[in-house]
Length: 300
Length: 300
Image 1 (cartoon, rainbow over the protein chains, first blue to last red):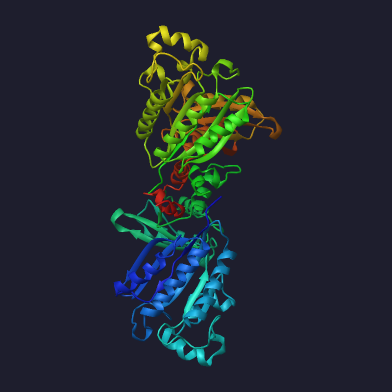
Image 2 (image 1 turned 45 degrees about the vertical axis):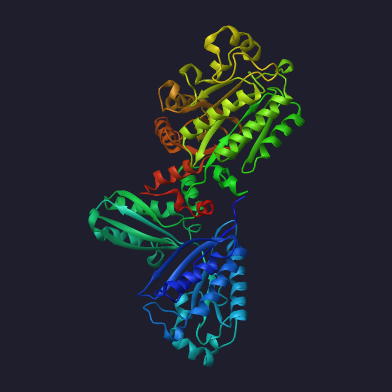
């Protein structure tokens, strides 16, 4: 049996005071069964991105403790940074990785949002797969006006009332956005040409926004030091559009330009299933199960 | 970091008395850190094959306890079965799966062999990668004459002296063969033709014994119920010859016969690396590391 893994990537409105970010990360790590993967601070954005994994129970508890610590230590009234934000815990996505469904992550997100609102007095908006209204799926729509603008709007505009909590921002911690989404895979394909227009054309052909593959965001870049170009993609739902499908479409488009694929890269982390899906496709495997992988037996 | 996983697949000369096999499996499972994967009994062979995993320490201890229980409960003087055998614990291969080298498994095999000989008074022969002489790499050479023949030969023929212990078989438990080998992957490729000769010709082309790929054993079969044929392979060293290379060679040979590959299957267990290698090859991944797979973070 695959282990139950939920990834959680909360964004906090603090990217300068390391002691604050450390305290938040420590609160998250204090929950047994969570594993901290990464903590990134950006001083210009004045924002920290923490990522950790665990089962539903551990992740929900750890996300709550991180939120509580952030509410305690961050004051939006004095926060300045380039990145839009409405709260101390600004946004908190839950991501099903293995042994757990999207619906189950949505349920965790809603329970977590309800608890944050009730115990921390921070109003919560649900977004992405956990959204309760179509106009709340996208983060920018919820965050419009940021902390300062939303503080006024929430009192007067019923359409901006939170999903949980009062129609009144927390005086220092603002509001939080909690939800669930599919894992994002950063997948780049390198093409053997110095002509960046080829990469741009292919990016246009493969990405959803201009008519290509659903769940694919793509841009064309030059990799000047290597004298080649790259189609840089965010695969926002690898079950809907797997890596190999994007790769094969790029290959077909590149052939039309007489250009070979010379390599690809996965930046950062990837769920095991996305890798197995590629092996499965190319080897035409019949009935292969992830639990045939020896290492997964350690998880039983 | 990948977890340290050694697989151990001891074969015991008992395939009829379930209580004996259960007692051996219980002795193996009693060691903390071992995970029993499978126990198979065959009454005709009068033989049981146990497979389990763990780190080096746990596997060595569990294999020893399994051997001790087998020595206690199995008497080769009354053992009859179709499968050749020389001892109660007949053969015990150690297999590096992850986070451990072949050389380290060879060292474990030698220490385990020495301990079995010293504490259980069962002479031990080292085989495969742990062999101390070229003529002891292959199991059939060591097992020649079986328990009854070896019992006499070991006393008189110095070339048959064990690697550990006296030149005298244990009166009831015989001798044991201990060693290390690469994991074996059972990989079958299905071809869209009813002509079994195509599968046989391709098997001849790809297998090592007739000039093809090193570390590949292959036979051609008809899958009568599906009206197709199959090249059935044992990949005895997937690092030396990976799955995708055998697949691509079969594809090329099949094209020459105008026959498509219609599927493949991995029977039983496979190390994660063998699957990652296939994805890596077909997607032309640059610098992909197994620890980019999210699930492996649970192992840290």
